[in-house]
Length: 456
Ligand code: ARG
Image 1 (spheres, rainbow, N blue to C red):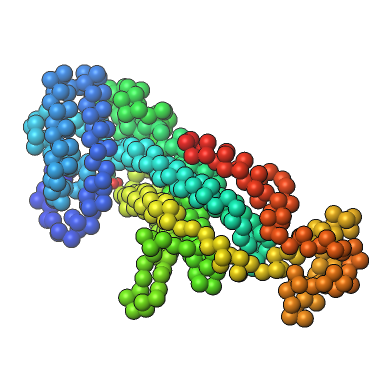
Image 2 (tube, rainbow, N blue to C red; image 1 turned 90 degrees about the vertical axis):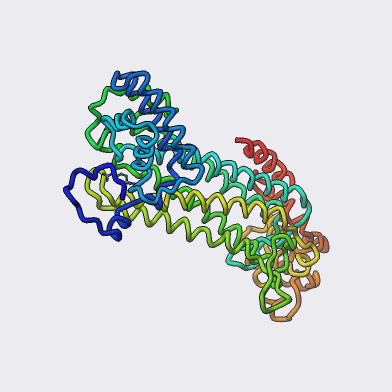
């Protein structure tokens, strides 16, 4: 294996299985772009500090650009220990002696932390874009069907009518929280470790403020020991992504259930449906099911790294090398799940007829209690009267809405002939008045605010 520390040992016998076990090149090649950018900035800092001549610095910069092109063109990195060694040794291969000065005062311990932060600063905006795209798709779906009303659920039992658009928008706000969490995480990611050396700080005359400017970091790490040990910035990102995928899973679960024959509320476009190899009739919501499975993936990436970091002594320990897969896969899984979710959202629509067929008269029970309350009956008494009616209807095997005024009056004398007006889904949702409620005007307000947030 081509390592950067080979001369420490005399005639070390290499067991290829151990070399492979110790190496991280199979996992960290995705950091190549960040590694090269950080190395260029470091070379410029060494030049300013007088460690490199202008000529050497220029050769290193040009050499790093060539290394970048070689890697982009598919250079086989398999023989190197990790991406840091690969870039350094390829640089020496390109420009010779001058390349050997690049590592002056520098350690892979700070490089890896720097690269990971650069990677996240680059990748998180892509996740935010994916989130905004999903938000726009939700708004478009909500706006397309402003007058569809469907049963809302608690305990997976029909509870009260809500606007379809309100139900769809209920999945908008978790995405807004995800954006907020990720933007907040970026504040702590945006701190530069470079210049921390292996753990104690660098002996090279590098101006860290210059490095931060060159690499566009908002702040410098305050403590070199902390800088090389900390991985909470990755965990924080993964936990934000895990919460995001948990929220997407809840939304996906609604859509899976709603698309079932038993509910039938949602129709899936052929574009996002899948079928069975055996059962020709099947139209399956696989895409939403895979979105639902994403939460397990993200929790896995988060918990794997969490447990790896737990109990480590200060500062850098090789255990930390195992942070690469959770980092890369966490970001990758989040992005492709958001993309799939967005496409799926653009290919579903409510089935009004099926919704009307499935909606139960019991959805009006609370409206009936509210009817009495509006006539001055204390709510607890109204609730009791309607409870008795529900029981009576159940016993008689008739829908609540089919009881006669006489039967209603047996439960409470204040039921009048006007009670029939209660049995109207539109009226039911319009009676919900407050901000944030399912009243059509309030949902309009909600969508107006949501639209502005899609841009932020
Ligand atoms: N490949 C290592 C990692 O990803 C780089 C840091 C190695 N440092 C060390 N002291 N062995 O963590």
